[in-house]
Image (cartoon, rainbow, N blue to C red):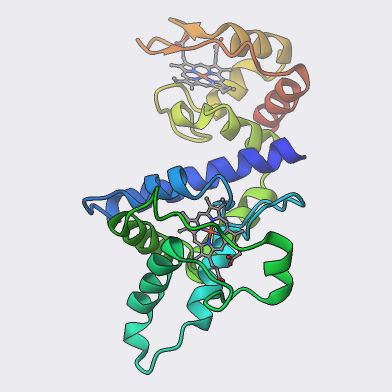
Length: 233
Ligand code: HEC
Ligand code: HEC
């Protein structure tokens, strides 16, 4: 179950990180810095993986929390005020400044100052990234993707896990033949199809492209995958 969840998150984050890269072509890479400087304590997943042994609030919670609690007269200043808060907090955390409730502060203890390992420009790049990445809008997009993903048949999930769909499509020929054609060829021979997937394939469909071997797929997964392809409507 946990492995499944982890893979799902990887799959989702892959999509989202691909989008993020295009947006922030700033000098300092806030995402990379966040991973380097903050991930040892803060969980960076969205939604966070629930971990009883966590030593700090998940970064999504920090971002939502700071954004909700920051006081501004003019809404348009909210983002820059929130960024200023983070830059200052990374340098000099204190109980007075923390938006964190007393219970949580007790549970986690105060964050240590990172002023010797993170400079202001780096914090600013990190904070910039945090407030553009951890947003309620993105969270709901991820949850929508997750709901869609959860609703897929198990065989299709396995096909995504092993990247079959990079080269195959259900209806159309891509790099490899469509699953529809493959279904026709192996309709009465599941065993041969399993063998082909495990061994890989070349030269059987008249193209030049090769399918690599997939001999690492567990027997149970392979059974589910092949059954899914054979019973596709
Ligand atoms: C050594 C562990 C550790 C590291 C590394 C760390 N933090 Fe924290 N952080 C904490 C803990 C614990 C808390 C909760 C207690 C608190 O608010 O001080 C916290 C809280 C925060 C808060 C305050 C949230 C609030 O609601 O008041 C911010 C902002 C924050 N961290 C940002 C960062 C950023 C940005 C980085 C990376 C540059 C980072 N942290 C790295 C442990 C860490
Ligand atoms: C890198 C691209 C690529 C990936 C990834 C890939 N395939 Fe293929 N697949 C092909 C190509 C190309 C062919 C046709 C090869 C040939 O002509 O023999 C093919 C053929 C097949 C065949 C027919 C083999 C035969 O003996 O006729 C099956 C079944 C198949 N793929 C299933 C899968 C499954 C299931 C996955 C994921 C586990 C997968 N493929 C991943 C490219 C790929």
